[in-house]
Length: 209
Image (cartoon, rainbow, N blue to C red; front, top):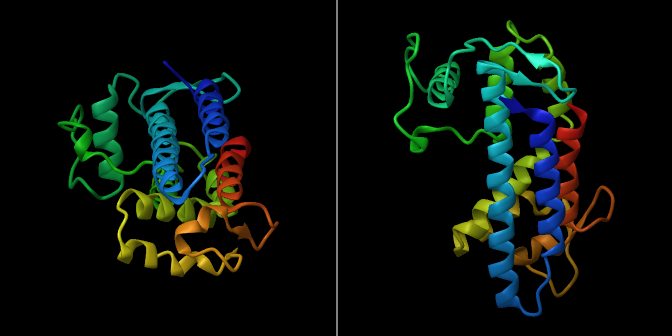
């Protein structure tokens, strides 16, 4: 049975541990370490949301250890994922017990737009999803920035790095920094390092839902 309180604690621990590893001595190290850390945190973020949605389909425990009954309590993970993809419009129909073939068919569960769409679809069964949608609006921009930076670093080329221009206006760069240094730039909101600012906002969403 999925226990969301444990899943949240696990994600926060991963963030703390990997933020501590964000140290480098030269530009080459910076790119390698940044890519690895961004990728691991993003994968952990997506895993949390996958578990969050599955918990609401097949049942589990919420953040206060209260039971979530589930829409289909007998469903396994692959069946839950098929139902969620149907709700996202990625499957035309969902008959009782339908399941995906493998993980390659799954959505990016932590994408803020996916979170928004699934939460909206689940409101009839879980009215509290309205609260999630409201809170998400305060953190969505930062999650999107983390996702965009992660994708740019994982698929590193000039086009992807130049694509960061679309979010560079939210950060302050010193005279020696370029777009590749965006994680070490400063947020215009609170002057904290971009990497720290984004991580704190992603944790902030989980701590407030």
